[in-house]
Length: 136
Image 1 (spheres, rainbow, N blue to C red):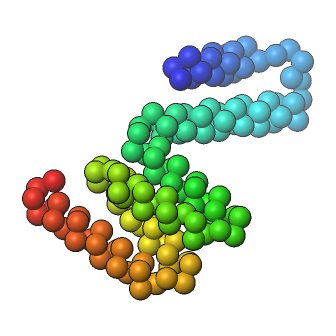
Image 2 (cartoon, rainbow, N blue to C red):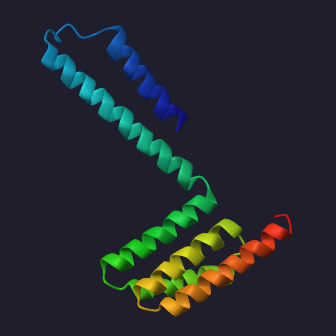
Image 3 (cartoon, rainbow, N blue to C red):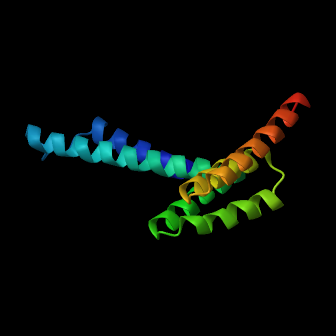
C-alpha cells in the first residue's frame, strides 16, 4: 500500500513540478487535472478497501453485508438468515455478533417474519447490555 501511495505522489509531483511542453492550452490542462483527480480517487478507494480487509472484524461485517446483498438481488433474502445464525452460533466477537444480529433481524423483517426479528433484536440488546454492565 505504501508503494502505491509513493508512486502516486511521484506522479503528482512530476505532473505539477514539470508540466509537459505540449500542454499548451487550458483544455489539455483541464484534462490532465481530471485524470489526476480520477487517479487520486482510485487510490483512495484502494486505500479504503485495504483498511477494511486488513481488519478481520470489518472484513467479516462487510462480507455479511455482501452476502445479504447477493441474496436480496437473487430474490432469496430469507436464505441469508441461516448464514447470520451460523455466525451467531460460532462467533464470540462482539462487533461481528452485533452486525450479525442487525443483519439477521433485517433479513427476518424483510422476509415477513417481524416477530422473530424483534426477538433477535431483544436477545442482541440483552447481550450488549450485559456486556456493557460487566465493563466490556
